[in-house]
Amino acid sequence: MKFLVLLLLGLLSLCSAHTDFFTSIGHMTDLLNTEKDLVTSLKDYIMAEELKLTKIKQWAEKLDQVTETATKDPEGFLGHPVNAFKLMKRLNTEWLELENLVLKDMSDGFISNLTIQRQYFPNDEDQTGAAKALLRLQDTYNLTPDTFSSGNLPGVKQKASLTAEDCFDLGKVAYTDADYYHTELWMEQALKQLDDGEESSIDKVLVLDYLSYAVYQQGDLDKALMLTKRLLFLDPEHQRGNGNLKYFEYIMAKEGNKTGVSDGAETKARKGRPRDHLPERQKYEMLCRGEGVKMTPRRQKRLFCRYFDGNRSPTFVLSPTKQEDEWDKPRIVRYHDIISDDEIAKVQAIAKPRLRRATISNPITGVLETAHYRISKRRATVHDPVTGQLTTAQYRVSKSAWLSGYEDPVIETINRRIQDLTGLDVSTAEELQVANYGVGGQYEPHFDFGRKDEPDAFKELGTGNRIATWLFYMSDVEAGGATVFPEVGAAVYPKKGTAVFWYNLFESGEGDYSTRHAACPVLVGNKWVSNKWIHERGQEFRRPCKLSELE
Image (tube, rainbow, N blue to C red):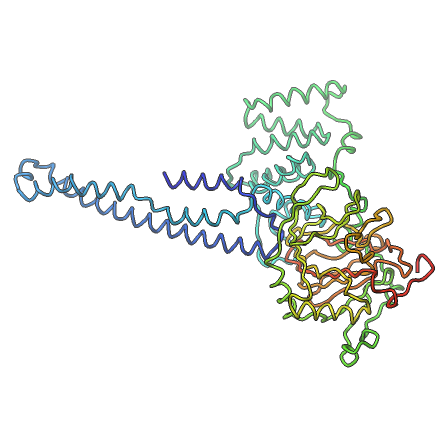
């Protein structure tokens, strides 16, 4: 009993232990190892308890034989002096030893280990974030709850299914955000699995309670009434169900529609995904799914592969690299085999310990809050649209770290390689940023450069605007994770060892708005990238300015 109380208190205290929002496979792997260690510790505790119970059982069996014999002829049994002595000994000494054995707490080792590991556990915010990541993937890749629940995702090596309780929890997360569209989808999936006979700790009445309300909130009175009646069939005394039934019938009668046909226009207006801040949401998600790419066969014929020597760079004259045209306008090129596996491993090894969570100022409220991704030392250079300052963004779900050239020769070599191939001065560029996107990790459509309505963008750096972007892909991704350009309908897919490059500014210095891009959510797998944002300062003679605004 003492162990159970301690364990319960330990688990309850997880809610107050603030940890990170895990969007990285690397850190999730650490959690798996932690859980494995805890399972080993739990097995040790079980073995200790079993050994303790075995000893108690042996003692009980021995005494059972003695007392069975003794009680048949108590006077004859106690007439033997040895039996009388042993009775005194048992009651004075051995029963005390048994009491101490029974009271001995075998859980100390496990509870101690659990307490140590608890600081690394995710909390309620992390669990909610993971649930929202699943909802984001569901929407982006047009996946049904049944597809998710059965684990039939593209590219998966190991299937993992969702229980009815899991589906119910996902629905509750949506419900808490007043997202009744997703509430309905996941509560229906939970109900379906319960109807199919799945054993669960949740019951149909509870699911129907949430589901009927979510359906009503979307304007479908017919369905809400039907679900409420089913709820009351299972639990006729359900107080809220009875109240809702009377209310729904009253509303339908008030509308003068006794047959239960609700206003279709209202239903249509209130159904569907909740609105969000992103105007190009549909185009963005279509590109993530591989739909809506606008490359015509005629334009495709003008894209080529070549060996590129960096415009006679001494480094690449004798061993030119492979360059491929990915897109024409804006021009996006990919370099193949441009970073080795050893270099990738080194960059990751340096970056992993630095992946941290950042506290930032919300650009809308001005309140300090925790970003939904982790970052080390320096802030991610995402623009605050209100202040123009460099800040982090709630629409980026990843972890990132910044690496300087002086920290390791590999980083300096990579920086020099970028300079040799682009012909641009990287001494004024930002440090190499390494980012890790776990499952659900994304970066919604954004510009890398500062626009005209952001006059103070990058002012603190003093190196001008971001003239170009270099992006290394340091891992393959089983499904999802493409880099897409919604304005032009382009999609570039991750391939380990390659890098893509594009100019954010025209030669005139004006921003190229067609470079607005996004990192699609990772559906299955793990995405490592590193990027170099190159700035205007130092490029005056390397990329001279032109007079025409769009040149």
